[in-house]
Length: 399
Image (cartoon, rainbow, N blue to C red; front, side):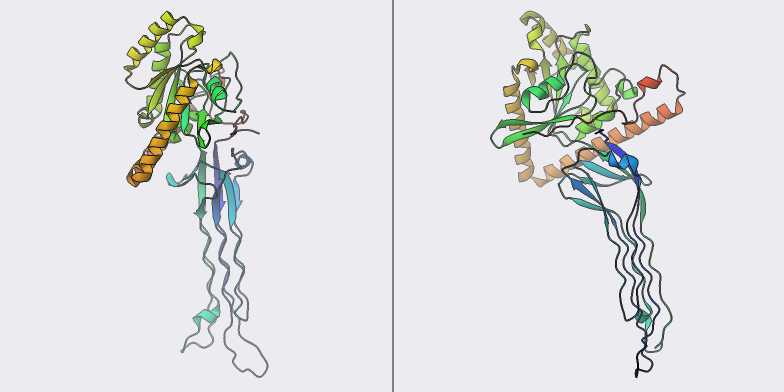
């Protein structure tokens, strides 16, 4: 199954049924009067969050969705049957955007949460509705109104508490394998990870959080190099980012330079996301001697002017990961407790996430516009990654 995190669809709400023109005809009843019933309401289009889904692949093959039209009214004051609502199920973490207005209609992050994206048309009125003291036999009816029509963009951002950030082969997938039951592919070549991976990190009974691993960034990713910055949008929902730095790079790149590359690409993608709480994780401490590791560590901290938390780990051996996960769990619990005690903090967090998502969406749209205007050369075709058609899903939720 392919992992698709974006889809554009058109939705059409049902039209309301027309009212009926009818008069009562019954033996021994003279001038029975109007008895035309109203039409039925048109069906609406509703988007519902489904925790069983993790991709939008279905929306790639069908882009037009229509709700049922309301039935016409009938005599004897019979009302037409209303059209059934059309429910579109999407993964948790889906943002619904009106493409014509550029407006965010809603964010579905709770299982079963519903959002009406196209309202069905109102029913037409039968002639019985127009009877008055001066008009005893009205021949007037009204048609049902048209339903709403919208062009929607669906964006999926994985729901995770902690996001992993780093260059290819920094050890992100190895780390998530070490601390959770997720088993993403791990190999000794760049871009082993092609889609986001999720793992549930269980610190102890009833204390756990979700960690997200996204494909690695390279220099120039904000201009479309490598897998580009498309997957960075999945980090906008994370409460904290772990910046992994390879302290024993196979290609000889200085760890300090690698760390600066990530910071620059993050700032170009979203300045607000770059200011998010971020912890520095120095990985592969087991592959270099203590003196070299200390020198590289000092160089990284100096290059970043770092004053936050720093962890030295060897993910493949699970060295140092338990303490780091314990600190992450404590930090997340403190954040949740503060938001529960002060609702304004929760509102501020939602506003911050909306700002990051807007900045990321704007940057991705700019990059796509630039790539569509630029003439394609044979050597550049493989570098452009706008669509999701070729990647396979590798998302795992395991306790």
